[in-house]
Amino acid sequence: MGVELIFERAGEEPVEEIRVELRDLAGADGKTFPAAAHARKFRTWYVKPKDEYLSEYAIPDDGPLSVPFAKNEIPGQKHQGLLLDFHVPPETAPGAYAGKLGLSARGIAPFELELRLEVFPATLPGELSFNPELNSYGPPGGAGSDYYYAAHKLAHYHRCTLNTLPYSQSGKIREPWDAPVRDGKVADWSAFDKTLGPLLDGSLFKDNPRAGVPVKTFYLGFFEQYPEDFTKHFKWKKPGANAAQVTEYRLLGPKPAEAFEASYRELFASVVDDYAKHFAAKGWTRAEAQFYLNNKDNEHGKNFWHLDEPASEPDYQALAEWGRMWREGLKNHAGVPLYYRADVSRPYWAFGQLDGLVDHMYVNGRAFSMPRTIEELHRRNPYRWYVYGSCNAPGKSNLQSAAWCLKAWALGAEGVLPWNATGKPDFKKGNDLALITAGEGAGHAGPVASLRVLALRRGAQDAELLRLWMARKKWTLGQAAALVSTKVPLASEFKQAFDDDAAAVDFEHLSVQGFAELKEGLLRTLSE
Image (cartoon, one colour):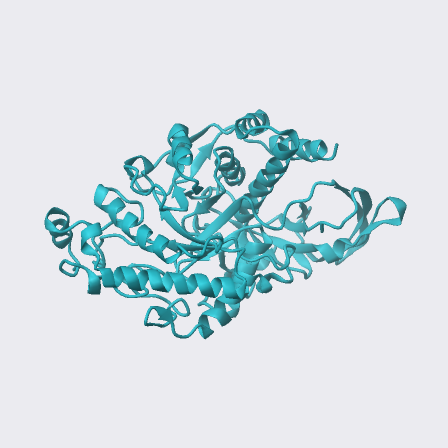
């Protein structure tokens, strides 16, 4: 829950030393809500994507504010925002609470503002049933660094999951996902456990609102070159760095089912088996650990297929073969949450080849135009599926990202995935991809979140409330989606620059009022 204060300077003189004092809020029967203990303060940072300045980043700031804020370098700045982000613990007694905010500034007599809080009986679960997954092509700051852990904690605080891919298209795997393998088993788990264990057991998040809840999704290091380079056990020439070699293989080479040697299949399955045993022994049974093949037959020349966003039958055949090896390794480990994931922008080209093999399927915004295809996929397979794409660009309403969550939920998805969430910051114009990014340029030493992350959180929270509401009312997903559309119109447009473009979904007719009425209506109904 957030409250934004906007400070305005009426004249030409700066307003300095602005301070906000949070005080306890009083409820019925002597109950109190300690506002200061359950709030974080974020200063608004403004960017200018086109013709006007717009709020874009939430900068942690517990110190005094000023208008103008010199570091933001806004000519003639008249306004400065401060977001008070409240977390209401589950044990808080329902009811109305009221109190005062104390405000002061240099040369201005201290004054107060009323603050009222209504706490409903409905409680959001600590475990996410709808997951805004922030994809990253590499650990921010390097795995195990202070920045790496801080970025994960920031995403977790906002009910999102930062998921960092541990290998590159050039075939290199990063530490500590490169756990050494000998004789079909991991020879040394120490670096993996020390660095990644806090994410998987939830201990990293002991100071967050969802204390002790681990990451929802987590990339494993399995890919074409781990646990061993597949080309050492492949009945065809090693791929090079040009399209002609790929074409030659596709025309003349053996199908994947015939090309992978038994030695590779056995090694791969044996290491999967070892991972399952280790995860079970460590008690890492709440995070969804994913085997995901991201690479393509591009200029890096490390394989013969589009394993990410497959575009032809051979691509699906290769994905299916790795799926069979994965299943073989897990055959004795029912209940251990290791999953095979595929990002498939064209699920209608799968020819049924992934049936029974893939656990998680991620589909781009085209999913919204083919609900019958998605329904048929669900009928044939118990997929957990997500919609991948992009959040709204800076300069467009952040309600777009919240509506993206609701539209995905209404189609049965368990989350959304912005395809690249840790881009470099642009504190002047904004960056579409910088959702969790380095804050030095805005005066903060650690990572900072775009306000679009807070919009994802809002959409995910509404999805959680809708799930609780459906269980209470015994309504179907279709009925609940129809209810949502009465307040938040979910009609949208999806335009791509090219076939695999992870574009944003554009919505019209969204309003703050509609979102507010939806949430309040759900809370009041759940309180009956």
